[in-house]
Picture 1 (cartoon, one colour):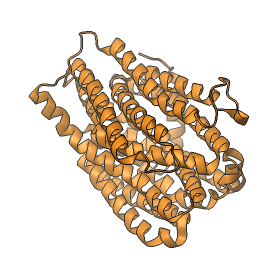
Picture 2 (cartoon, one colour; picture 1 turned 180 degrees about the vertical axis):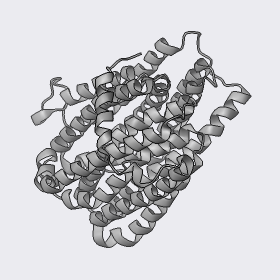
Picture 3 (cartoon, rainbow, N blue to C red; picture 1 turned 120 degrees about the vertical axis):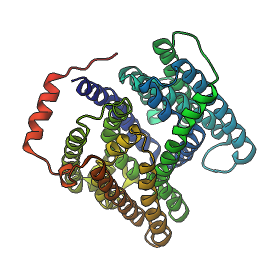
Picture 4 (tube, helix red, strand yellow; picture 1 turned 180 degrees about the horizontal axis):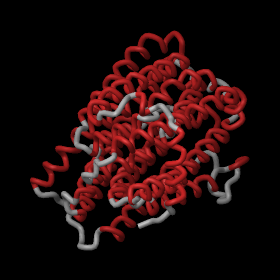
Length: 436
């Protein structure tokens, strides 16, 4: 019952944040159009890689050891705050010395501000959110995420004017990137008040350091390979395609990532539950989650097959008229990836992160080889098709490994049963949204 309440809480509170993030994505795309929004999201994808590299996946270690009570929370919190500040300053110095004028579409001042705010803010957010998720509290951090996102939505300078007269098209993205730092500070303060009552300790003992970074080293490798799997196609598209095509492709990719939100939410529950040592019934849990996601996404994709050609330009604006065909080519990958996140979370919680590394490396090898060969000639359609093929390769390997681990049939993870309807109904009727 407790696992059910945790799952329900995660779906509701994280779902609210992702809905708000989807709305602002649409509004920014419509207002600033493909070329401008594409440039901002492109530089953000580079920063996301910097966050992953500088962050060393400490958030995974925080959730893992906080769930197991393996390292005092005060030490984990103090160390994570110091690390976030140091990495933010390091990235700012690097951008200032080497990359101030590296990207013509972004003004130098915005490039410097965005680097430190994005890096430092996202590190603080991810680290400190880990304390809440380890304790199955999905409400507080996501309320903060939603509030900051809604404020950004309200302050978009529609028709050249914002509710605050000083904000316009030229300086809106300064506010956009500052919001990441404000968000991180707020979540850090909330985590300190909620979970750290005995002061701060900024240094780990040698044994704690080895425990934390021994786990994080593997998680870091898995995460960086997975990020490359999801983002490396951007660099090939940026090199061989026009700015408009890049904006269209990134928007398709962001739309595809929306399908990964629900599996990510469910994975955030599977990970701490498994890390805490609760593995009883995990095969059954993974099975019903995978089946439900797959059947829901199958019908969602069918809907977009018939409506996407007109729906995408309507939602994002006329400059996004090239989204439809790449999306169609992404559909096999969407369906394949629907069950991968919960399987990966299980292996991470079971301290078998090497599985996740191997899985992502298989997909990355497929993607790089295909992108090098086909994108220069066939453009964003080839990028979508190769990405989809890479995701299918990842899921095939994942299904083989989870079958060996839990002795669950591969077909069982996707073959929907009518009994699942009653189990889902019972779940929603017996659980109420609660926060701790």
